[in-house]
Each structure stands twice: as structure tokens, then as C-alpha cells.
Image (cartoon, rainbow, N blue to C red; front, side):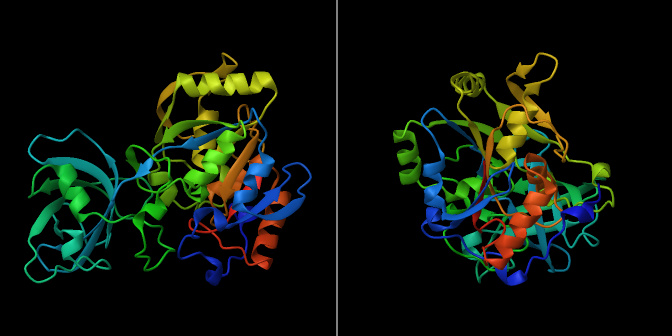
Length: 368
């Protein structure tokens, strides 16, 4: 199949630049995965499609302040580092090496240094320090990484104010997707209300629509709730550039599926109820934990590079809550696999025609 098979016309004005407030007031498209029949609802209506005994499974990963805005030490030019993954434990002296994506990618070569100032003492758009600000952290480019992502480097971070974690939190901004411009609203709106450990460079956005109140109502109805964790990283930022979709190489991401979550899934299936994945990261975690040799799920704490394309046989997930995705992305391929390419492309045409708000801060879709 061709990557272009998963393309659609996305008007720029439909790309949501801020989240719905309250979260559950966004729109919800409900689609039957077999027939393709569509209903237009509000997200809080999702409770009407959940039955007592069903199980919601969500990715509890929290977004770290991974976007670092600074200035090159030698020229004073603007520079940026997006932290993706810590490569080794802290050295104990306020430093550690990370995998990251740098801008400008062509100019930041091994040996280059970037100086960072606290986010409350610098311009939120470019990292320029305010008068009197002192450097909080530096980053030195150590090496190249050949991953297909422009600008990917190994960087060594050094704190000047205490622990490296303190420095990252003092300097860092939320790593919003590049199609969201100038959002300076509440950063918690780019976190799910059930997020826990900071381990991701991007939010599992399908979960952004849940409020504490809505989750409480869902649980009161008798719907169970469980979590997995997938550390959203490099794969989120990697475009599909090959002509044949099957030739795309997924970058691996660490995920965790516990025995407790597996027990809840098995009990749900035994009752004849549905397992509903909240987001594509939850779906990939659950399907990655399926052991085809044993014919069941097993606890996992490892990396997955599972690439779900049309023709994939789903073993765990019965329904999916998701957002509307970037054209020609692996996520378009995943949702097409869960229903059909024809159903998904028709749904997206309807979403555009009905002026749905698209992508990370946009509206939601329930595929049942």
C-alpha cells in the first residue's frame, strides 16, 4: 500500500491552536468500525457508548518539559533542543547524556554549546534572557545519531543550579507539536488528568478530553479503568517519507503493561465486555503485550516498534478513542487498520466538511 493512500486535505485553519475548555466540551465523532456509520456528538456523550463491565485503558505517561530554548555560546544565535530520551543515568555531578533533536540542525555540530536560562527569566518564544538573568544549564553536542530524523544528536546537559532535573524543569517548556503556534495557556491542559510519571516528549492526546468529573461518572456507571505507560518519543516526530507504507521503519518506544492491567483485561473479556483503548499509544502497548506463541498477554517492560497497518489482526482492543491525525502518518494507517481505509477516509472528509477541530488540541473520535 502507498503512503499517499492515507492522505487527505487538511485546511490549516482547522488545526486547533488551543484546547477545548472544559476538556470534555469538544466534539466527538462516533463511527461504527464495520459499517462506517457516523454520529456527531460532544465528548462527554462518550459515557453513553460505554457499558457496565467495559474497561477503559489509558496511557498514564506525563509529558516532561522537554523543549529547551537557548542561545549558541559562540555566536549568540537562537538554538533549541528537544529532549527525547536519557541515554544513561545522571553522572552525579548535575550532568547526563540525552538523545534529542536540535535546531538549527545543520549548524549544531559536535562540540557546539548552547546556553539556557530559566523559563521565567527569558522570552517564552525564543529563550532570550531578560536583563540580569544567569545561565541555568548548558548543552554540548556530543555526537550525531543516524535515525532519519533531521537534527537528531547526542547532547550532554550540565546544570549550574543543582540537580539536572531541577535545571530541566527551570528551563524547559512543553514540547507542543510544530503545528501549534504561540500557545501560552495553562500547561496542564497538555497533560491528562490521570498522568503520573514524566516520561514522554509528547502527550497521549486522546486522553486530554477526560475531566475528573467525567471519569468519575464513567466509573460510577460500572466501567472499569486501567493504565499502561508508553514513553512517547521519537516515533511521534518521524514523518512517513517512503512511497510504500510497509517500508517505513518505526522507532522503538519503551512501554509498560502490568499484570494487574492484564488481569482486568482478561476479566473483561470473560464477561463478554469490551476493552476500549484511550489513544493509539495505549492500543500499541496492549497489542505489543500480546504473545502470539502463548496466545495471551504477558506483562511487559521493554521497547516496542509495532507498526500497525491495514491487515493487522487485533487481539486485545475492541474499541478506540482517538484524535484526528496528521495526513499520511502512521496513526492514519493504524486507525485504518482498526476499521478500513475507506471508512476512515470518509470519516475524515466528513470531519473537514463539518469543521471539526483537528490534531492534538482538536476534537475526538470513537471507533466502536
